[in-house]
Amino acid sequence: MSDGRTKRQKSAPEPTAEQQQQQRRTEMRVRPTGPIVPSSNVSGHALMCVIAIMSFLACLTLGGVSMVRATAQSWQSQISREITIQIKPDDNLDMEKALADARDLALTFNGTTDGKIVDRAATARLLEPWLGEGLDLDELPVPRLVIITIDENNPPDFASMRKALTETIPQAFLDDHRTWVDRLVAMANTTAMIGTGVLTLVFSAMVLTVVFATRGALSGNRHIVEVLHFVGAEAGFVASEFQKHFLRISLKGAGAGGLLAALFFALAGFWQSRTLATPETDQATALFGTFTIGYGGYLGIAAIIVVIAILTTVTARLTVTRTIYEIDLIRSDPGRTDLYQS
Image 1 (spheres, rainbow, N blue to C red):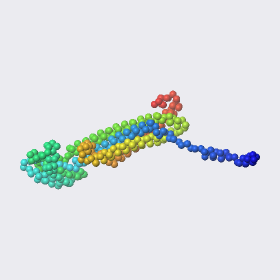
Image 2: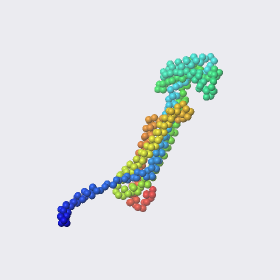
Image 3: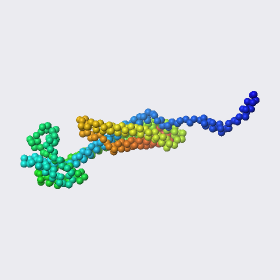
């Protein structure tokens, strides 16, 4: 029996070297590789929070500038669409007839579209904040007004209209609001310049914060750059890996800050639309206008998010390239440890 077993064992062919190698390959398990740059470390989270905060402030400032500029343009447009004819009372003047004559005369000029006489009740309401209620206009020499709507793109000849009114009704005075328009334009330009300056300061602070935060995060991962460089990884490969890592961080942070700012303006506009004709809303509207930034404002928020992502990515790439250059200098001259410390 033992001889038969021995013969059967000897008759079984032994695996060749190639078959043994194939068996080893099938038994080998590819170990999952992790990212070169740690995706969840303290520096990455801190940088993401900093980018989110600065992005929120920049987007908020941009939205505020857009809102103030739109409000100023709306005021300017409303004033520019109307002119006022003021008629002073006189003992020998029929006020109602003079008002009608002034309106009809103004409407004969090209560039005028409509005319409206401010009646006695509306005039009394205009004077209530200063003279109180129950005002009798017959007891006071209160001027009466005629409001003429004009075409902004093709305004009438104000000098000729003023001359014709003065010749027909000596007590009439034409106010084309040019002084108010000039003051409003100056105020709008000043407000826009101040807002742009604030936006520039916020954006500059954001740039500096992102640059230093990115460098600080990279300084904590300097050993990774050194190891990869020592084992023969090219500088472009190392820089691209860090670039991808910080691009993800910047997109998450800037996107969160931009979305919070857009949500703030959307909620503020919704609150304002739902609380119309209330003292709080009237005061907020008088100070800030409508809390709507339009498509241009939201496109500006998206542009800020893209700019922050590009800035952070470029900063990371330049910092890694500089780190590798410093490592090469230290290897060529070990005495220059000041580069490592910097």
